[in-house]
Image (tube, rainbow, N blue to C red; front, side):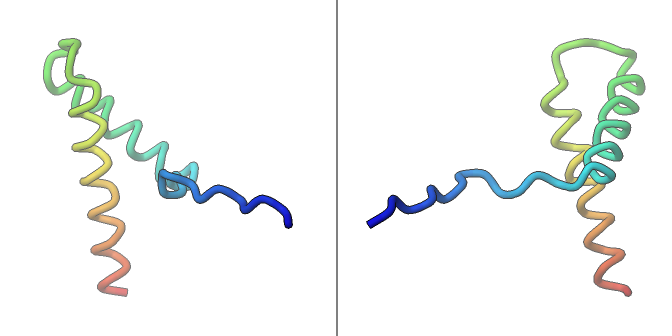
Length: 62
């Protein structure tokens, strides 16, 4: 019997284009805050929600 392939814990990462849009939006959030450090994770999560949310909204209306 061969060992089973482990199930990944994380979901598959977004494709490169989506990840780049998230990165750019997160950086804009950082700049809008006056380039103050310490909120990188919040910026990323906000950007991710905005980008993925707009992507899902577009898919729903298509």
